[in-house]
Image 1 (tube, rainbow, N blue to C red):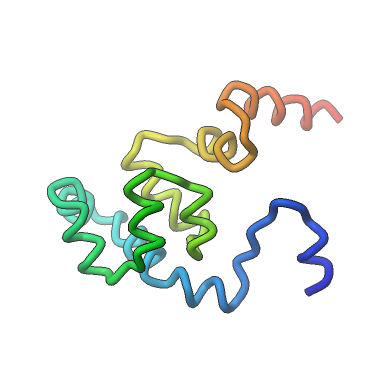
Image 2 (cartoon, rainbow, N blue to C red):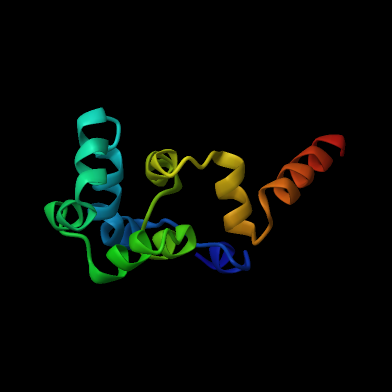
Length: 115
């Protein structure tokens, strides 16, 4: 555990966080189905209730706050399903996670490949 604490700004998805995030991750997994995506778009609040999201998770979803979703136990692998509904790609989400714009994040990735 000590090594996990040494990574500043990292939100670790350990056992307790996975348990906390189960409803959110289960909901995002449902977005694999087009009918679920349609149901979500038709009534987001009802969809949150269907999966029994916590108030913290609902608020993060309402605000489209990816970092808040991670802090509420969301797994980036499941949140990617939600990001797709919003029209975000992996570079967009990477920028949100690092506090960079998408273009800054893309430039950062390119620079890392040069090393």
